[in-house]
Image (cartoon, rainbow, N blue to C red):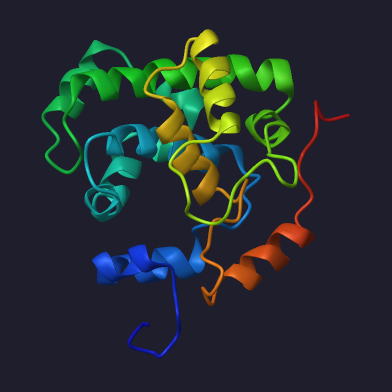
Length: 201
């Protein structure tokens, strides 16, 4: 129960910053390639840390990584890696920084083959019944399969748990708790959302 008397997902209680993120972003379908790329990168940076840490630094990450324009990030070189390792506004982890640059290059390849990143990710939307009840797991058969496919394509820091969190946040599944005030809102947004399919005409 929040200060406003509304029931929300239990994880919101961990931090006041979570409430706005939960209410306005988490679980709503996203079809924008840049936002999808940003989120999968930030989930990779979160590995071993809390989402609160990443959320607090999100604007710094956006500034550091050219707004997560993957065409720009793909051109980053060793000078950029050195610059980012000195940037205390982000998580200074060489492996994760280099993975983000690598993943930007892989994102370009993926967009060329699939038309858009969104078309690729939404092709992996679980069918009805494939996902269990809300917040009952941290991985799923779909997140395992998607993780394997991304790794095969050369992506890094995209394990099944990371991908499951990405799917939750980007609305590929509605994982708001059954009694959460935002569950129905997210369901309506998903109903109105037209998932991109295949290459554009």
